[in-house]
Length: 437
Image 1: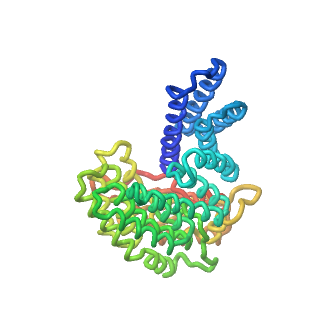
Image 2: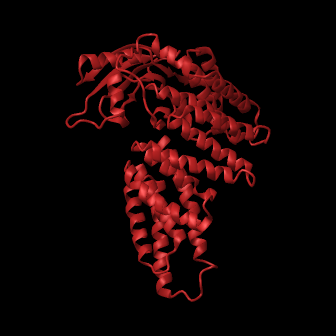
């Protein structure tokens, strides 16, 4: 789900560049352009269009090769079409980043950014997507300082649009704040979230305000990520900052509960409750936005242990699901909302996987209607007993969003989770469950 939405955002950005490319070669094209040049240019634009189509379909390798071919063709032309070149470079960078070739994505993104600034200005708001791509790629390879430098520049780009377009500035400032939290700079992130919310209040921009309030609350979940605690919505996977947790961490003790309570700040919870209120009274919000907000609120209170409050939000979301296309799966299976990752598995985020067979464990358990875990048992493992015990301890204190049927949370048996101790992208994931009551 997360990867699909990321690719959709790429597609929208590239489509905008594609439209610019088309317009650059229509009415404004010089009449003296030779037929040969027009033919070559048209073929290159068609290649970029095909690459964009491949990217939207998540055919990443085809997209990469097509964008590379387009860049090679454009570089050969004496009269470089910078608009098309920006589109191709941006597409190549997005393709490489989605293929987890983060370091390779940086050079084409930098080049596209230089061309864009030369055309549109140093603080052009159009560079937002490229700057966020650079922040993402650099933070993925551990270059937090370089990512922070681009984030600071993104904030300057946002400030440059403050007077001309306050809503755009507020939206960009929310994105800047979110990135600060994802990089582990929580104080800076919360301060910018407050400024963004102040800009959005009483402007009638319900969608932007709802997203900003949810993003403020998400910052608290990123703070839990910094302690090696995994929550819902891909928050842990998005986090790029330091993870500070010793090997003596006891998932079966009082420490996880304490860290959760400390991390879920009252200010963030207040913003979340405001978001839920906005959902109930707004007539302009999209149904999917409402469902996402209600599920997020439910997950928040579920991981706090406020089961009744969480249940009410889940039921509200279930009532709205029939009006949202392809959203039924959101409550069709248990979703983990709190999981203290076993210490030895957590090290996979800091080190490269060792050579040889992957170390993993597969555990089966029941998720009760209140989201707690019952009767975990090992199905398969090639790890030591101490690693297996760490995983079982983590599951005993885990909490899930329960499956909801006909508006009521129900028990799910035979839920299966695979915990990797090597691959950072496969740390732990549910792989199956049974509909048996």
